[in-house]
Each structure stands twice: as C-alpha cells, then as structure tokens.
Length: 289
Figure 1: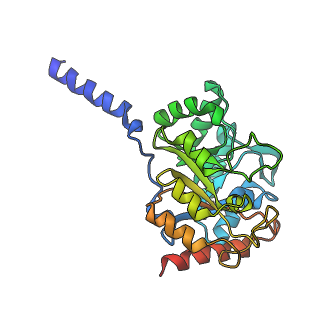
Figure 2: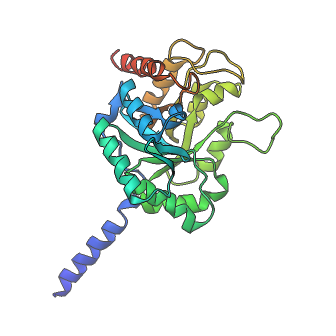
Figure 3: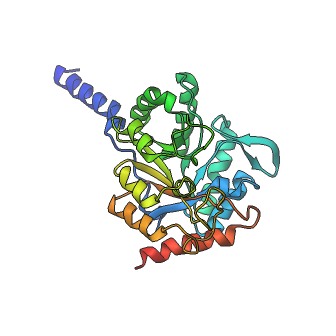
C-alpha cells in the first residue's frame, strides 16, 4: 500500500476514535418531542408495576420517551427478574421490542450509583450504549473523575440529581444547585444536573432560580407540580399546584435545553395514567402557544 494511503487511513482512524469527544452527546431525535421537549416518564412513576408495564403506561399517557431505573421488576411472566444494568441480552432484546411496539424511546437511566471502580462503572455505560441512551442520572460525586473519563469515551451525558434537603444530614449537599454547579462547572460539557424541580420546592427553593444558576449545565429534568410548598408535598397534575411549570418551561426553552424531561409522578401510585396524561397535555398545550 502506498504511503499516502496509509496516512489517510491513519487520519480516518484517529477521527473515528475521537468522534465521542466532541463535547456533545448524540441528540434525542426530534420525533420524541412534545410541546418542544423530549417528554415522557420516569419509570419510577409506575414502580408498582413492571418495566414493560411502565413502557405501556407511558405510551398510554402520551409520552414519547422513558427514563428507566434500577430495581424494577421486569415483567409479569418473569416475576423473579429484577431489571438493572446487569440485564442479559435476552432481557435487553425483549425491552427493545416493547419500546419499538409502543413507539417509546429509552433516553435515560437512574438514579443509579456509579461506583468509583472502572470495571463496575463500565457496566453502566455499556448498558446505556446498548440502549442508545442520551444520559445517565446519578448522585455519585465521589466518582466524578471516572465519570468524566467515561463520558468522554462513550459520548453519554451524566446528570447529578437532587433529592430534598436533609435537615439532620448536613453532609448531603445535592439539594443545593450551587453545590451541583461547583461539582460540574469545570468538567466536560456533557456532565451537569438532572434538575428535580419538585425536590427543589421541597427544599424551599424556587425552581426557575435554580435553573438559572445551572444555566448551560442542565442535562435532564424531573418535572413536577406539587400541591403545596412543604417537605411533605405530593404531586398533582401540571398547572394545578404551586410550581411555576410555564416559567420552568420558559427557562428551559431560553437555555435551548436539549435533554429529556421525565414526569416523575410520585402519587396516586396505582392509578396515575390519567394524571400523567394531563401533565403531558399541559406541555403539549404550552408548545402550541
């Protein structure tokens, strides 16, 4: 082979090997959007049911994407199988078949601990790659260096999630968007926040202000409306509670947010499809303005 051809092949190989280090994860397809956003459910909404049920119910409510989580029963006909990133190929194949049947795209996985152990962490990223996920959701700040390495290699986003403030545990800081920003601001652009707006309200914060603090670093959103501003508040359909859902959507639009919005409806656990459908209808109406 001529030298010039060898050089060209080398350049091509380098280009392909660095394709995952562009600083941007592959986009969620446009046909997954409702009201301008990639909108669907966090499977935790349907935790009383199986993974396959959660996909069906997300479709029934009008969602187009789903965020999976670790530990849900997989299907009624496999009662002993618990779904997570260690799922064998036959389970992955069955999952993909149900997603395709229902017209739902899996886009995210979490909240899952990412261990500071490369072999174990790779299992999570390999799983995400098999499913073509946009992102992974975690709170594993202690693994940030390893997470950044794998984000660059796999071209998969990672969002750090907030649970509510813990009055008796000062060591828990993820509730504070300023702390999350301090963790991610000097890291690869594909590392940021999974903004759980309901938990911000439960922590006494204003979601729009929190989103502004994290501008440019919002990877995904757990969108909620709550019946009251208190630590014990519960979910209600969008537009019927105390959260400024239009203001949240306006801010995300202003930030040119390109990640997924998961409706994580943690109330009316066994009969929430109608409530979730109302939430999806709210966002659809927002986009039609």
